[in-house]
Amino acid sequence: MGDIFEQLYLAAVSMVSLGVFGGLAFYIMHASHSRWREYELSYAAIAPREPTAKRLAGMLRIAPPGFRWGHLSGEWKSERYPPVVLGVHPDGLSLTIVPPFRHGCRDLFLPFDKMTIEPAAWDLIDRAYGIQMEGVCSLEITIFSNVMEWAAEKSEILKLMLQRAELVRGLQRA
Image (tube, rainbow, N blue to C red):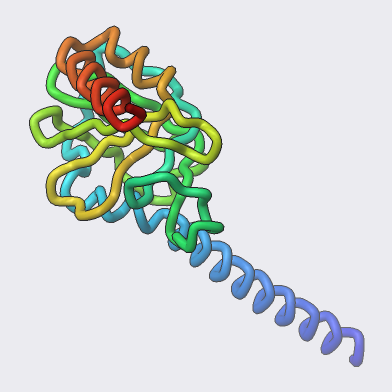
């Protein structure tokens, strides 16, 4: 009779432990996408659209603009999102987190008419670009320069935006 109670006790402890672990894991995953959700409020992709070109962009960062060393700069919500697919459309860019890492995040569509691209620095890399959008205060999406230059080959508007950013970068160094 004691073995049955012991088995029931171990089963109950296992179920409670799995529930606590699952809840903690969900909380961590949900909290790690808080910056993405700030962009979702204004720029969530409503309907799926097929891009003219798409590429796995690797990692991007969403944080306040400026040179940052991640958490060492005091920015606790500087978040990196790996891996992200960048899509180029005639009127904007789309960002999609690859499915195993999505955790309920919707795709973003960033229209060119509400976009500003600025030169950015990311850790030791000084040739990155920061995408700043109207309506999302004091945040930018930082993407590596090789990915943005690839996207500029596919969009004339984006090419002009990158040329402007390079002029600004030159003026900042002078």
